[in-house]
Image (cartoon, rainbow, N blue to C red; front, side):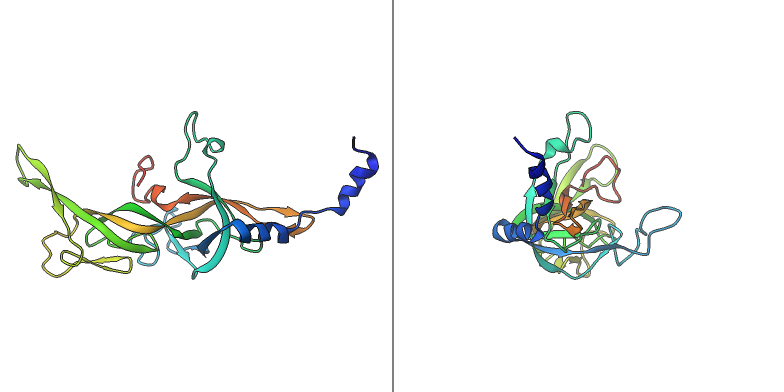
Length: 236
């Protein structure tokens, strides 16, 4: 049974950020973190970024240089984030950041020890930049074509694309050689090896006794985000 003097003595005890940070260092995950800031190309009339901006395509944000941090996560509790009855958002995860690291909306978090395979759909000549920040390699690539190009009946055929022959990879940009058989404006798909990557979506600040505690953030994995140029109901 708690006595009045016991309750009063609670004033002498406070949560210590240093203890939480020590726990994160001991059991956390190495990560590469970049703060986000909106690009100035966002239109006053549209409320969206300029789709032709060469600085921030496709998301409308710019990112600071990477810094190494140790985070606690990913923790996944999908049943606590219902979007509609009986559903949850795939790719959601929670990360706790060290004290003093204050993420902004759409900051990026990369896990350098977690390699995954993802698909990327691009358009030759207008969308040749891969949105994942750490591309380790291209496993496979293809486009499709209709045969015959007009008339009926017809079939759709796969057109394999070979790295080093049909295209090259310059960091995150696909480069097409002169005389490429693939027409400008053709959609193509890459299977990529990348590092698992998230963007910060919802920031939960924490403070006790006038001191910051580690912040906890809901993050969304990049490959489960809806592409900015896709219909809202279409995941990309």
